[in-house]
Length: 210
Image 1 (cartoon, rainbow, N blue to C red):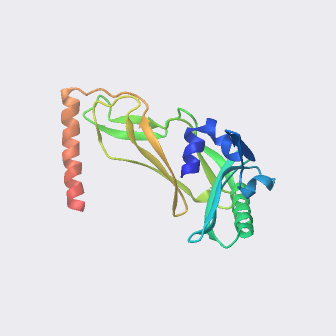
Image 2 (image 1 turned 45 degrees about the vertical axis):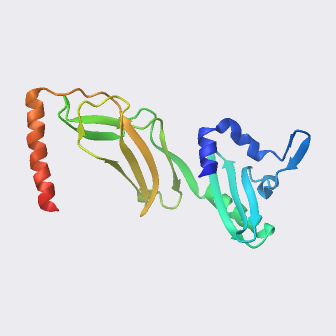
Image 3 (image 1 turned 30 degrees about the horizontal axis):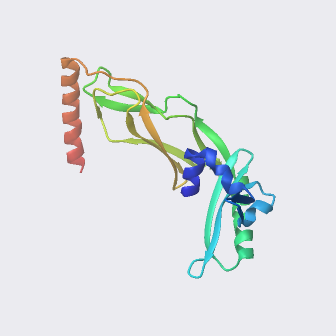
């Protein structure tokens, strides 16, 4: 999580983790990450060992536009740590394909609005929605918009609404925040009255179902 956070939110600092050595205040330190010298496009992140946790590593590689981060601990030796991390990162780089499921500014779906000039509001993400699909199971992708609704008008453009959840098979693979793509003003009195009647009926049905 820390490696992903730094790579995503502080990319200007991430290159430090791929340097083979570093000198500061006349003190030189060698990067102890064994992956950097393997020729597998590794560029981070950290390696260590302790008596209780064994040999561990958080390794990162960038290969053909795909960023893979792997975390391992409890390995018996430095050699086992290096080899298992290499195999895991290689599998992650070659077994998945980056796929764009929604372009930047593309409407992902709609959320219901209560008491508004419109009955719904379009939703979109902050940027494109990409996912890494397993090459062997591309047909097992499902997605769902999740939010607490209906939303009460007025709705501001850019207002956080919910999230897009994407499953690969039975595994929740990705959660992407969604925002209102447009403003929705408070509706007229007849519109609000109609929405109130609908919500009363739906709410009664919900309670009956429960």
